[in-house]
Image (cartoon, rainbow, N blue to C red; front, side):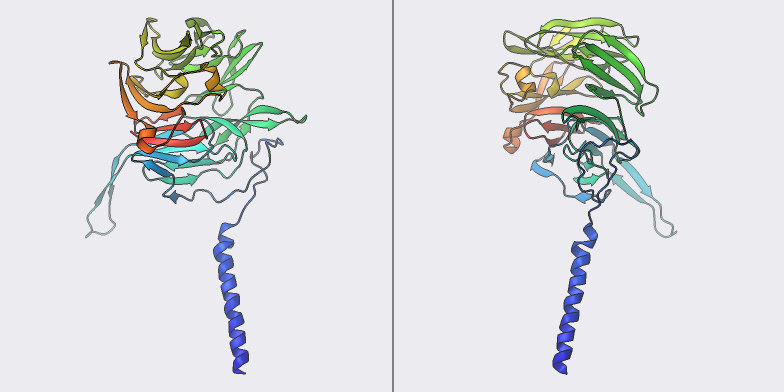
Length: 410
């Protein structure tokens, strides 16, 4: 009888352990597959869906510290284009409900939140740089995202991704993706570029036969034609209250840049220059540009008001730079050697660079080395898609080589 009781007790113990293991390892990590990744956007399917895990659960200790102030946020690849949201330091007074406990004063340090999108799944993430906390914001998937252009408050991203058509070919589609994943919708097919301001967005449809720019609200309403041009393969940018349009950058052809009024009138600013590439300042008062002459890259700033140019002490491509919000300086990733057929070979991925990051003050024309990734953390970075927050707190950039996302605490 005693032996039977021991056997029964052992079986009950094994059963209890099995139930406990189930709840620990399986019940808490259930996989949910979302069958409608686009809310009410219609019947279009961008591809197979991946598993969707619980959102809004912060994970501490995220990222990889490469060196003091240099952090790899995500191994990637991530979609090209991030948004940095800055929260200044503040003092909070916490009052107590009891009469005997005095009020407590809490100092909250500054923080920069970086929002980015995983390229393969389309999941939206929030990363707090100083706290090193990552949170997945969206519960939808959108595979194959190429790039993302964010609304300035980080509430939504205009994403471009590859989509298969009925004939088995591929086309680029554009989707407005809210940061939480809900309520998105498609824009017209074949768009080559998206620009987003605070409340408005510009879509560009550019081909070999010409270019058409459309202005609309960020929610997709109230669209109207901004300009129509016979110039093909244009790229556009905000230039204060007007716009900047440039022809395709290539070392094989002369390039031009134009100021475009709100009424669609083109005024030439730059050109003809081989390999011309541009980056307008937030204020619209200046345009950073590079061009190629006899195989050498030159980098300068154009003063839009008086058409004067200022050569910079360093040579790089505008795609490796970002203006500060006040337009008085810029951060640039500068290759240790600018060689090859540029910018074409870099665009095509046939050439990579080893960059150092500099801050260039336009008033003094003084370039100050911010950091050298190889010297600081023994890593080689070919930087692009640089972004800086309004507090000039954190510099964010992508490593073009592997699509990883990085930050440097300024």
